[in-house]
Length: 143
Ligand SMILES: [Zn+2]
Image 1 (cartoon, rainbow, N blue to C red):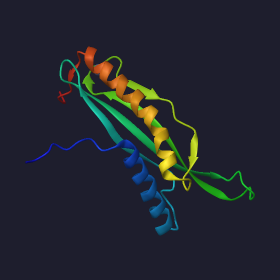
Image 2 (image 1 turned 45 degrees about the vertical axis):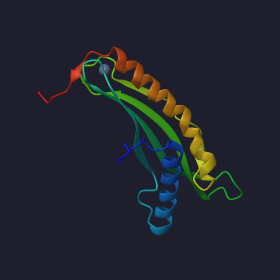
Image 3 (image 1 turned 60 degrees about the horizontal axis):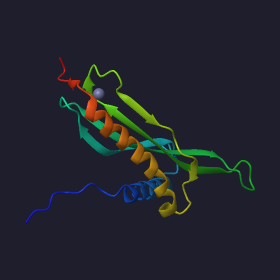
Image 4 (image 1 turned 180 degrees about the vertical axis):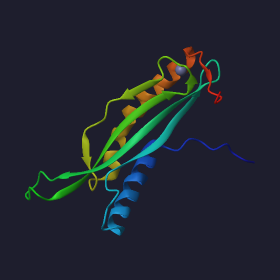
C-alpha cells in the first residue's frame, strides 16, 4: 500500500542545506556563491476562493570578517528568515515577512543551528493559514 508523502522535517532539511553548503564551499575554492539564499517551501494553504498561500523559509548563507583572533579572517555564516505569500489575484495583503534571526556560524554544530529556524517557520505558517481562511482573491490565471 502506498503511503502519502509527508512533509519533510524542517530541522532535517535545514541541516542538510547547511552540510551541502559546506561541501560546496570545500569543493569550489572560488566560492562565487558563498553568499546565497536557499528557499524552502514549508507550507501551502488554499484560500477560501482557491488562491494559494505559501510559507517559505529562507536560509541565507553569507560571509563576514571574523570576530576572532585574526580580524581579517573571513568566517562563513548562516541566517534564517521567513516569508508568507499569497498568490491571489489582486490580494491586498499578500505578503508577510518574518524578521531574520541572529547570524550563526556555518561551521557551528548544524544540529544546534537548525532549530533556530523553527519559530520563523511556525510564524510564517500561522500567517499563511490565517490569511487563507479570510482571503477571497481568486487564483491568478494569467489574464
Ligand atoms: Zn490573499
